[in-house]
Image: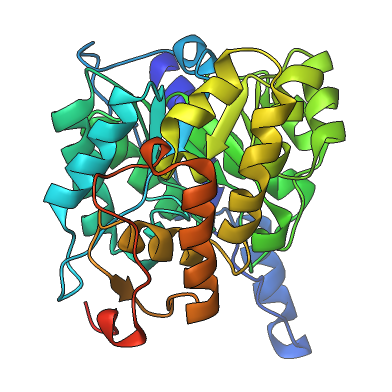
Length: 369
């Protein structure tokens, strides 16, 4: 029974409370007698014996300490077929290019990978496919976060069951909660396995304050934080011994070399993985950082992943298919990208085709998928 209680640490027994009936004068004596002997019925006591659905097999398993050592993690793009289903051949080619260029890990189904546009069936399938094909060569981190604790737990159980090495979890968005609610939410999902917490207030509408991270850092399963607030916050955590990945490509060089970040969880590395690896592994390089900043600015001209989807289509490595509500960048920005590729050097970008400016009619926008 002790082990059951340990597994169910973030669940509590709940008792249903029934209102006591009011008594008028004519029934006062009867009600007083009844109230004196009233007890809550045992059927109303609901012990929660929910056990985590997890395997003890070690194949593809990793520890939080192994995740902490990753320096370049790519938030991988999800490409599509013309009808909006996953283009697994193109996806496999993208992941292979990450492996060949030295990326340590991939985030599957994150914001960049458009997990927000996937059903959970699609989401878990893609995590399982990635582990099955590439889990021995690169760490697979599944975005199984949700603003519903129940969904986050269920998706994380499934993700770990299909072999993902770690989970990425965001704080509850839109239907925001309190600091205590965030702590409870994260403690529940941390019990599933190695976890990276993702703080991106512009998307969630709520900052994860240091108090929350400091509290949940007591869990051995916390690998670290993907932090988008800025490098002052990065330094605060690293000074406290908490592992941090920069979530901002344009700040990651300084985060890594000046503020103690372990590395970056990157969008730009979808396009230039070799240069991003150099930026994270080979010491301070302000000239390379300055060379990449215009590309990073271009990528985030509109909300991610609009720029990345447009760029990969123009490089010829994915079909020009967009799941709505995302649409390609306007033609002037598409022309600007071609010039950026020429300035940085086509050889540094993924794919082998010449970069081209696509016309509006070249893109397919899919609303039902």
